[in-house]
Length: 69
Image 1: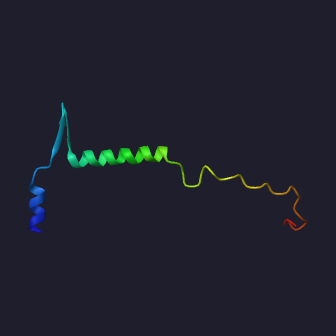
Image 2 (image 1 turned 60 degrees about the horizontal axis):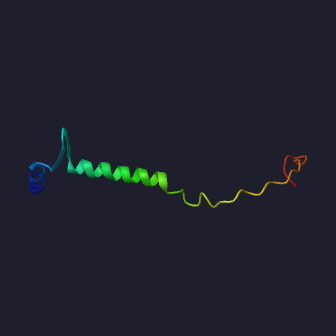
Image 3 (image 1 turned 180 degrees about the horizontal axis):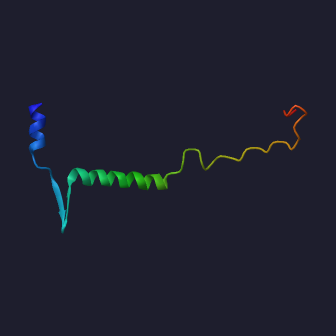
């Protein structure tokens, strides 16, 4: 438990670009979210593009009790 408290006391690593300063952990999380977003846009849904339309049902009117023959 004391080791975890000592690790939290250290200053994190920061990246500096001009006036932008961001921690390395936050930069990695943002980069991972961007990668997941791009993959979600580019990758197709599983089985979505090769599915054929379902066959049409016969155009028979329902029976007297409301069921199809």
